[in-house]
Image 1 (tube, rainbow, N blue to C red):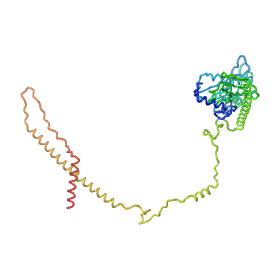
Image 2: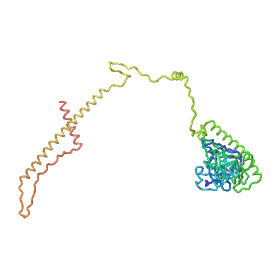
Image 3: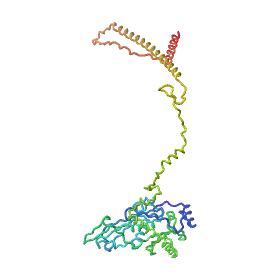
Image 4: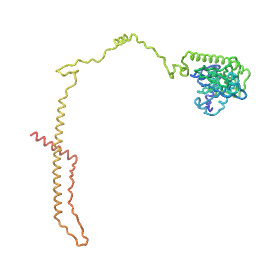
Length: 446
């Protein structure tokens, strides 16, 4: 895992806090973070939350041929996956040092401790046995992956149920859950890992280190133990030298933490089994508390509909009367009515404005008629001139030359020019209109 390194200031701050027996999340040196266990709909599926570190565990099984050296024992297979979803530093499909170390520690904790009776997984000796596969997926990395993975693994194995099997001669029959109830695994004890982080060559000790504390620690000691105070495995990494008294002190702390964790696991399994038998709600969706925004359902609240009319009358009586008061209509004549005072009459003003507009329109129409008469007179004069020019060309005599090749000349009448209107400037038009309007007004006055 390639995590972003801490700055010197952050490193000094964390080490100084550890020397003063203080932690960033407010815990004491030997305190564990809150552990929460939730089960899925299927058997053998669970999510364990250790603070903000979350691990998903899923157990599956299938019938396979046994190993040659152990024909009467089942097979246990463990797989841990560290995906980039948990932390950006994890690379998919790559066997990092952290992944190999945690995977081997989980195998020693669960397989080498003989917590599962592998002989009970045998169906036909030397032919068919059950292979139990435990897949662990890290969903969020916030420190102490080993403890969260070990708790999730043992909880999933205790919660798992394999199909029931019957053997008649050489025929093996596997029953569905509807035909026969599935059978739980035979588990002798529950080993749980507890991690201890050491600082300044073992001078200071912390239980359940967080992700930032793991970056500045000098070494870590992992002890796997069951509630009978039997050490299943122990591992030290980081290159620190520990004294015998330090190891004994860690083992005593582990015994207390494992007893508390075992009791919590047993209560969670009992509650889930009770909910399934009674037909209650179970699964990941039901484990989400309703106080969060991500809740799927809300409890229905009863609405009291008694005394609704009385309450409505009280509200109406307490309300203020309407502010606007409308006057009664005044009838002047049949078919008419008046509401309010209204505004001043403006009919006279409208009539005067309409008269002025009508006078202006008459003046404009007369000016346009005067211009049309001018245009007609000009067009008639141009037509007469073109006719006279055509008659003059007809009277002229054309003389041919004495050359051998006679020239042929075709005379065609000239086309009459197109009618064109003389364009007058806007100023001239305005002046002509004004003079015409003045003459018209004088005539009216006379």
